Amino acid sequence: MKFIGLSLVATMLTVGCVADAPVIEFVKFNEADIRLAYYPVAGGRDFATVIHGNSTKAPKAQFDTAVISALHRGYRGPTTRFTTTPSDSARPGYRLELRFAPTARSLVGAACAERGQVNTGPAEGHLSMIAAFCYKDEVLAKVRGHTRAVNGPDDPALSALVAQASIALFPVSNQVFGGGGGGGQDR
Image 1 (cartoon, one colour):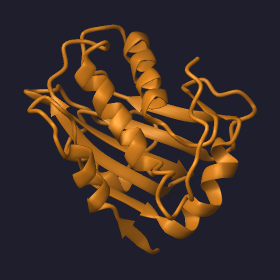
Image 2 (cartoon, rainbow, N blue to C red):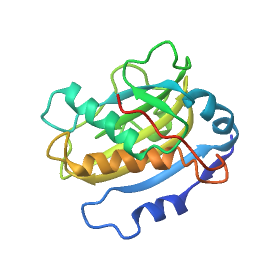
Image 3 (cartoon, helix red, strand yellow):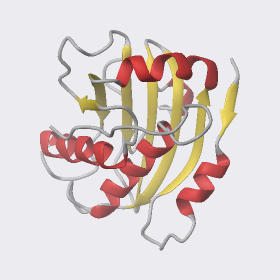
Image 4 (spheres, one colour):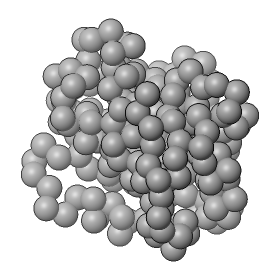
């Protein structure tokens, strides 16, 4: 499987950042598979999204809503609707996995293969996140990042981390995807 590292994207995302800004520290994608899957999966469809963990004291549903909203703010691809409750329009087998405060056992490479409850831990001093665009157990694109500890689901640091991860996972302006994009729908 041929993976392309996007360290330049990660560098661009952190240029001019302040101490509280998110840091995307790792980005990889499978160029051949993602090129074929990306537009048919996202284009005008629900995009199944699985969110593991809750790094705040707020109810999980409130945390998930904030994460979905942040995904849409960062997303620049074809029109889609990230949702934890996808309709029949979602492509079977494809999903976005997000893990907040993952433990050492929850590795980036296993982001799509682990099913059910995923080990997450308490956020201590900072919030880490792993995100992966999956087809069944295969990782098509993956991102790891972190930011300072967040105070709640409406904390700008959480929103910025998720939005930056969305940009890194689906970089429609690079040569792999061709430019353009219609953005997501926040519902």
